[in-house]
Length: 560
Image (cartoon, rainbow, N blue to C red):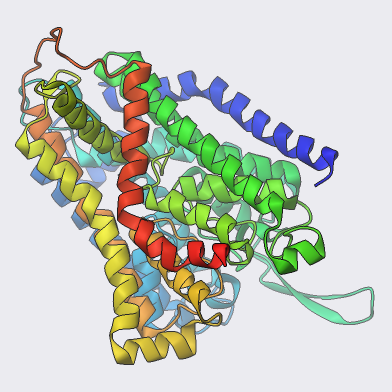
């Protein structure tokens, strides 16, 4: 790359980092205030009356979990029904009902904040399904993630309590006070840049060569804003953020990256504020930021090397990348969306070099904790912090404590189960795709277009994306088949709600404890030593779990 391109990429990264630093305190403080304020807005009180919720009542972790599951189940059924009834809905654009298997996969995908898309959106979904189904779930699935994270924070903050908050109140406040206001501002900014927002359907235009071309329209800007802000990732168009109607200019590319990072990087501040020690938030932030910087630097460096015969002959690894954004604009976006649970793409990860494409996969395998999705990143990192405290306690022979709460067998069992769920889903799903003869035949003959180790990498990426609720794809895999629609749908469901159940159980066990006073044997969890320990624990757990399968896929391909 030439010097100007490098400096342009560095300027983009520096701009995002500067704005995130400026947003950290005000946005984090507002999030904390949202969930600790005793006052309800008039709009919120109206919603509570409508659904029959007493905002003053509190819930045990079991009741909180039931609220999450019931609300999410209703969401799955509603989005599924919209897709199956599409032909009779207004603004269907003449499109037929979405097939059963794909409807199930898509409904699960958007309710679980995964936004995996095994279809071309503009040719499959009408405006009503896009707005009333997918866009609505972009909001509420993000609000569910934030609510669960806040419930866990309350577990650390409370003493001798049998309750962890009220799910319905947390859900509504996340929507009315955080996601909706920020999305409106973001949508207006995107509109000024040229992101489309209309109901014109398909427009036939004449090209300069005398031919014709059909251009799709749609309410894109409103959905694009929450797509990034809520770390969702589902594109209005098949090309996602590589499409000029979704991401028209380099500066909107930077804006979208900023939207992706804004809430997840502010959540540690809210955590520190709510537990009464801002230093704890800075420690979590330091781990998240360090892992993110290393990841983006690695993928950018590997893609800049243009490893491989074809990239070297071409002079750069530009296959599958937008010329508008270049290598660094593409790799920064890829890093941002796979470090979070966003799944949006402005370049095709399948076209990355073997080792470069491995980094987005590893980002998801980390559990998307740097900084992770809205809410899910914070509660994932806090679970790892519990593991790190336990390891630190073993090293010095002390009873592990975190924020004044003893980390005993119950907490360690729940944390251990949490970190085992997604690896089991990823590895089991990948193995079953090749172990069962009938399924293997379908996978190899229908789904995989690139046989060999790269094909294995595509399947591994798909299950990694689904189980970690990311939603991005290698884009070289045909996933709209009975096996993948079902298996990935199950992986998304289990990968979302089993960890949530474990986190809420953990929150309940912590809230019930009284605070233990600090002693000389207490491990300080705000100092650089703990930051380093937590970062090492995060990486080692991933390395030990996934290294064997990576050697069969992207590592084998990259080292050939």
